[in-house]
Figure 1: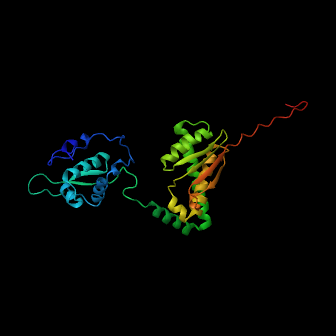
Figure 2: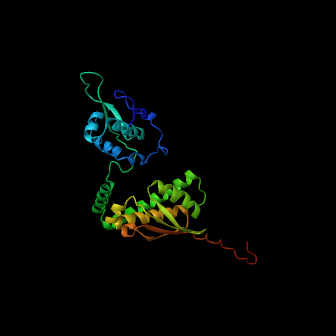
Figure 3: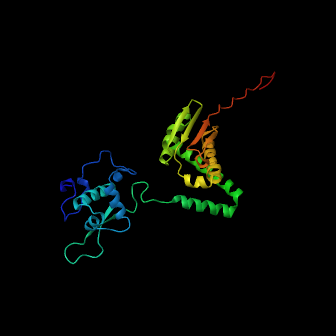
Length: 269
């Protein structure tokens, strides 16, 4: 790989700003850095300790210029950072070390097992409160979260009235997508919407404890959503925690109750 691609000379610091711009704009949670197996190998190598370019070339058995090029791209993506060796060498400046950034911008690396923490927390709740009380508490918490989320969305987006169109735009394709839940619309009318969710951020815990996650927390969450939007009950048709390949919901907007007319009576007000 030629040095004019932004890797500088052998004695200089890598300059990722001189790299040609990526095909798509760099953004948080982009997987562009993993497009090359070399970059993935470098990232894995510097996750446990800082390494010099020389150490990386020996460890990966790759050409020095290749390592420098891919290191520069990882620096550009914010996945790797440069630091000096703690002890200076006898001659010259301290060696440059490259190590994985503590807070990477790519989701899924390094792997984090939050599902273990969730399972421990749920089991602790059941142990302390008992199964029946635990389901009640989780449902109540779900109601609060759902209601708060809808109220927050409405305030931020200026939603004055929740309609199926507003629900799709601001809730499903806005807040829920940002939360990591991918959904598709099956049908939408002026009074209803039916949709499927294909990703669940709590799937591992839901599969093990569906009575707590799906039938308590999730049910409560949608109850809270319903309360904040008005008379719009949600029906859950399918559930990933209970073995379905997706979660499916139907939300129906009930007509506002007609105002009662005051009967006319002689001499009445």
